[in-house]
Image 1 (cartoon, rainbow, N blue to C red):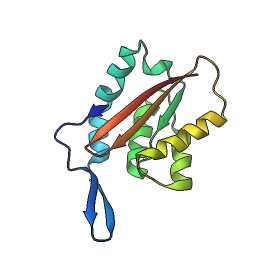
Image 2 (image 1 turned 30 degrees about the vertical axis):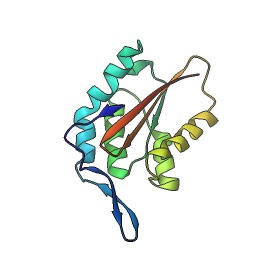
Image 3 (image 1 turned 90 degrees about the vertical axis):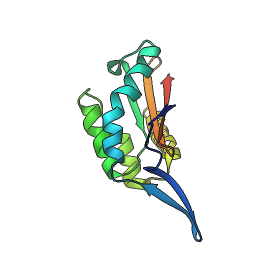
Image 4 (image 1 turned 30 degrees about the horizontal axis):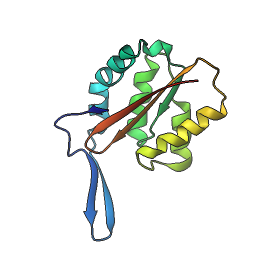
Length: 135
């Protein structure tokens, strides 16, 4: 897990009389973009990889602006997040667990043995969870 320090108030939930209310600050995409290198590169390096080695980007569809930000960042590395975009269009953002719907789409493409996937999800606190997958 990667924790974005001093950002505890930009994403989370507020308990109200009618249930849980999502808190999502407009600055979240900018915070993600400014920390991207720290979230991704050391994690991959620890596993002996670089972003060029990743075949499948399995990204949490956290909303249109967040997806657009991540799409732009990954495009710089020649990576796409079309499955994330499809899940966002079909289901919307159903919190961090929505990343599992993206993984399901990736699995339907039948990744080849030895291919890598990077699963990335953001959640309250503000934090990023990273999982490296190898088929």
